[in-house]
Length: 61
Image: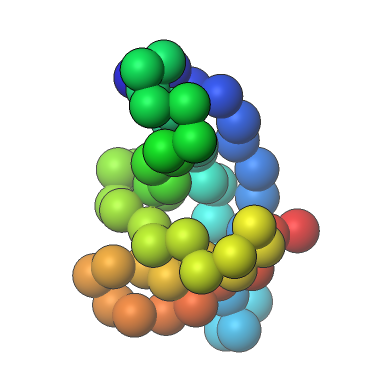
């Protein structure tokens, strides 16, 4: 699994997050999104994500 992108995101509360995007070479279109601290994210679109633990939606800046 290779780190292919990283970006900042914000929640409605204004809290900032650092998102990392990983991709497996064998699965060209399958990407794994998670916060820098390891918490998993569910991708809702290219710019909107949900923290799996809390359900909070965050938005790419």
